[in-house]
Image (cartoon, helix red, strand yellow):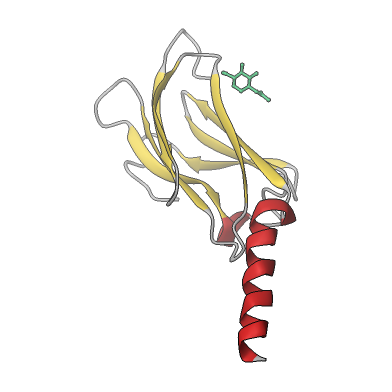
Length: 138
Ligand SMILES: *[C@@H]1O[C@H](CO)[C@@H](O)[C@H](O)[C@H]1NC(C)=O
């Protein structure tokens, strides 16, 4: 009986991972202006999305499904062209974003003045990190 329960549980876990959760799309947009590019490197525990030089007006995007434990996290490193202008942030964090901030998409906008993230629940753009604050974890 115990073994059967474990088998049923494992089956449910693997099913929910493949079909259970809605897809969430992440978009990180370069809106610096003046043709200025930005270097972006994002990764999760399972996927390394590689390093991309995103030109002004362009974006990188990807989509994923939340893992069963809702602990999915995509960690990104951003670098402006000048030395010292760089920071790390979570483009998606299950703990922070699941079901609220990013229920179907997670939008990020990099302006010359800093990094902005969109909160789907409250429908507002929030400043996450601004140059001059130095390095800041968000
Ligand atoms: C995703 O990024 C690609 C490459 O920059 C772009 O062509 C495409 O329009 C983007 N998709 C969405 C939904 O914005």
